[in-house]
Amino acid sequence: MGILAVAGLSAEMAAQGSGRKRHDLPNWKGDKILVPQAKAFSPEVSFNGLLAPQSTPDVQLLRLSVTNLCNFRCLYCMPMTGVPKSAHEDFLPFEELAKLVKQLSDWSGIRRVQLTGGEPLVRPGIEHLIAKLSTIPAIEEVSLTTNAALLARMAWSLKAAGLIRVNISLDSLDEERFARLTRGGKLRRTLAGIDAAREAGLTPITLNTVLQRSTWQQEMPDLLNYAASNGLEVRLIELMRMGTERAWCESEFVSVDEVCRDLGFEVVSMNCHSRACTQSTLVNRRGSSVRVAWTIPRSHPSCLRRKRLRMDAHGRISRCLMDPLKLDLCSLLNRMDSEAAQKEFDSYIAGEVPPPTVDSSFTLGRLGEKK
Image 1 (cartoon, rainbow, N blue to C red):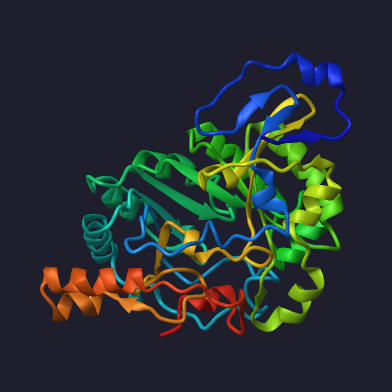
Image 2 (image 1 turned 60 degrees about the horizontal axis):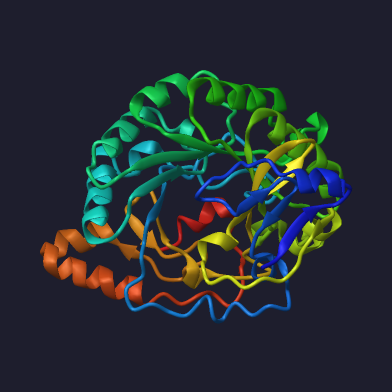
């Protein structure tokens, strides 16, 4: 076994323990946590054993992009001028998207749907799609990833429609840095959206934080304290080389390994055969525990570990963000009977091959438009 300890905490506090247990988290013992950190953080550890191909991938999550439009222009996501605009009428209607999700749930193990964009809240009537997805028998959870700028006035209606939880993009608690990074976003609106989500019960709330070399040392202590004070979770995301700002992305890249070391997390090797336990851990912050997860597409590419699919607003499926080959589900169902279409789908899923690197000339907003 191994122990992750937060630097600066007394041995007496660590020995006291809290008795707090959660079946889906590593064993919590006061200010120390039993976690499989070697495989998650150490750059020397090979992931080959964890990433062995499976003949029948166990797909559990569908990330459904309902639009490519967004009300932010984040540096790492899209150019200042935005992406070529599409009218929402050009996308599949919500009824069709819900039918495709139902078909995918029949064919695979999909039990959760996460709505994304662009910014999903800019698409009018998003509550109607949530309501339709919530009635699909196999779907146990509908969640949403958002910048939260519109969430303050929508949180309760989203909850009433059947939304369970939200992931919220938040890279800075400094007003000026937030505005600069989002090219005009208002921090107060995002924070108001977080407050509204908490009040409406759209929990647990996860803060998605993209790490940047020039600012993470200023940002992370404040973000962890904010998360601890408000009962939020944090996901650390490595910056990817994308689109028109690839040079900037390269200069600002910092690995999760480096961030965790410099934050004072002591990583000790341990043996663990469970994939799930490498995905997140608990960190003690001023007496409160914060669940911290990580997305590490550059330091530890892991497409074959993914238990998710992506579908864009036109009904095209991809197996990961950088998948060079998409499957047009609408076309498939129009030209084949259900049995033949499922065989084609199974073949596509089983053929998953990870990209050699997370690197694209497309912006994040344009990846969903690749044919």
